[in-house]
Image 1 (cartoon, chains in turn purple, cyan):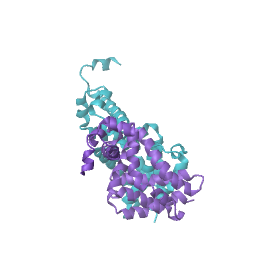
Image 2 (cartoon, chains in turn red, yellow; image 1 turned 90 degrees about the vertical axis):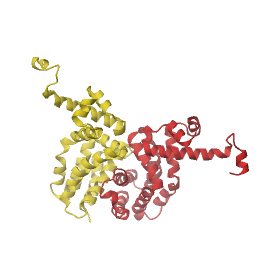
Image 3 (cartoon, helix red, strand yellow; image 1 turned 60 degrees about the horizontal axis):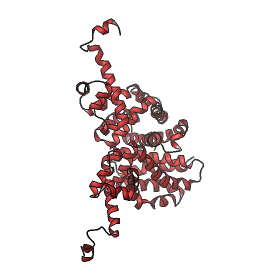
Image 4 (cartoon, chains in turn brown, green; image 1 turned 90 degrees about the horizontal axis):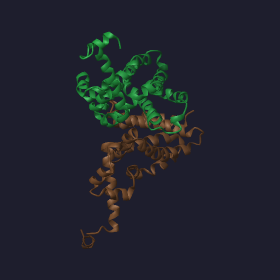
Length: 201
Length: 201
């Protein structure tokens, strides 16, 4: 700690608020992914972050809003990926989308917030709404927009269903041999199906 | 109530135990599907069934065992369906399996226990184990056995992934337009994918 930061003690300066926000979001992601939406409380998040509950409400609002912020931040590094998935030749979109999804699931840092979203969305309507906004609007909406077909949204959702179901059985419920299969083997089988849903007859 | 049954009061006769078991299982299905596995307690099930907790333990054992019994009974009418799905010409197995799964989900009576299984399996390892035993061993195992291919189990699981994912997005998270689409339209798109996973190159 420098003399300058030491001097600022006693009353939290404005520059510390970004740190506090981050600490709250990190704690929120941990709590939501471990306990699920319903069993997580703003009080529990505040305690894990070492702050007062009022501060959590001050920065984020309701529990649903904390959840959305926690999940959105986790998705932030991947925000550009849907564009990369949607752009490029249409006959490779199935493989690009499949690689993107498994890339996120295979990465331990992004698997946790995804687990939080899935666990929570399955059990709670508010969290399901967040899932619909984030995943459907941001990822599937962009993919569908590239298809230029009247049933593009339904196609994108059935493609997503193959990906969501595979992720559920492999990473959440851990069904064998799927759970231990090489990820490239899975991608090789799933990508053509995703492509078929998106651009097939 | 007849005179004969009135006379049997005071000490529960053996013939009433089947009713009590059924009442406990019905209450258990309600509790698990509404609250999920973790938030459901043996005490809560007992209360809903109007019996003592000790009786629930006496008939079924632990919470995991109550859960498995509750879910197994719900699946009982469909126990013969996997055989019907697996038998018959192999080039129609995709459509038979798809129709079987959507038939269960579209039926309000069987949707509830399925929701209980999905909600619980996603959030709890004990419930996930029940899902693996019931769904994987009983349904997918029989389908895989008919395929006579070295990678039959993985094929059956990837087919199941399409079905599980579609059910998740349609019935649990309720993503539109998938949630409101005509079920025949969904079957027409999903069945060939399931068939492809099972018997494709």
